[in-house]
Amino acid sequence: MVIIAHVDLDSFFASCERVRDPELMDKGIVICMYSGRGDDAGAVSTAGYNARDLGIGAAMPIKQAKHIAADADIDVAFLPADKAYYKDVSARVMQIIAEDITEVEVASVDEAYVDLSDCETFDAAAEQVERIRGRIREDEGLTASAGIGPNKLIAKMASDENKPDGQTVVRPESVEQFLADRPVDDLYGVGAKTADQLDDIGITTIDELAATPVQHLVSVFGDTRGVALHDKAHGRGAETLEQREKKQLSRITTLPQDTRSMSDIRPVIRDLAADVLRRVTSHGVHFGSVSAIVITADRETRTRSTTLPAPTQSEETLYQTAERLVTAFLEEHPDLAVRRVGVRTGAFTDEKQARLGEF
Ligand code: TTP
Ligand code: MG
Image 1 (cartoon, rainbow, N blue to C red):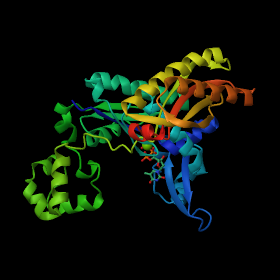
Image 2: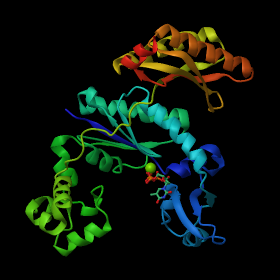
Image 3: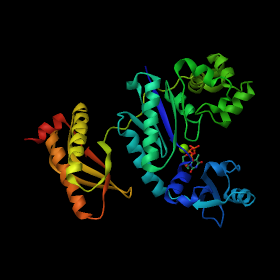
Image 4: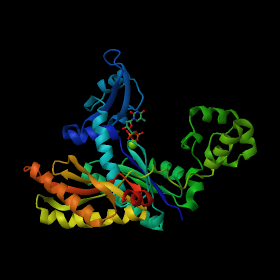
């Protein structure tokens, strides 16, 4: 059975700003993309949920949002988008998601699909997703919402169902009911233009679309779009994730407590190295580089990397190299304690290439 989850962070850019400045917690937050064409020219990138309650939302002109905020009974902060910062946070969140899961498709800066078919039941998958969301909250102070379904389409739509900080399971037998009364443009990938065209032929809801013979849709929209609309309306979507070729394999874990003691950290690196090596060998590759990832108590991520003399599959080499990198890091930073530690391999060559390299 295929089980796919879609995880999407809540009001992502705005929430990142709240993490950085807790004084924003009770204020409305509006993140702005200034166009540079004069004072308030530009559009809203996203708004925190309390600002959304006022009617402010993505793509609204900043001027209009300020107008609304002026009459509001909460304080609203307008902040410029700091994309470099959001990208850093995003990378760490994606690491958390990928920690125990082999198949992850990062779909945008704040959303990822994960294949949870190995969980075997929707209940077990839901628990796994709860754990992932818990770790994101604990480590980054961000809430995420999630949808769990039999394919990407349903998972994506389900993740919007209980936002913010909620998750929704749609089992295969409930897909039809989940879709039925919604407007057609609730279907992911059906925009306003298609919705208008459907409206012209008397179709406004997903169940009406599902009941329309596919030939009719093909005659209006052509083969590809007609069939795609028919499939979507029946809740059919992709069951496999699009994964870029693995360029790196890594594992990170949180230590029981912040520490600078290598006698605490060594056994953890041992376990991580063993785990990463299992994945390296299952991919049939040799690694040519090793990195140690250290997330310090101040939640900064720092990475130390080294290139090996030759690609290898040696667990001992992986362990010792990572151990050496972390030791060197601690010596360089006598004031920093380690909160999370990770081991990463990269610069892969396949076995045949590696054997040639031995001569
Ligand atoms: P979304 O996930 O669409 O929105 P969101 O995370 O802010 O809110 P939600 O809780 O509904 O998921 O987009 C992720 C980020 O991408 C968002 O925080 C800001 C950015 N973005 C824009 O800059 N412009 C836009 O029009 C949209 C939709 C998003
Ligand atoms: Mg989001």
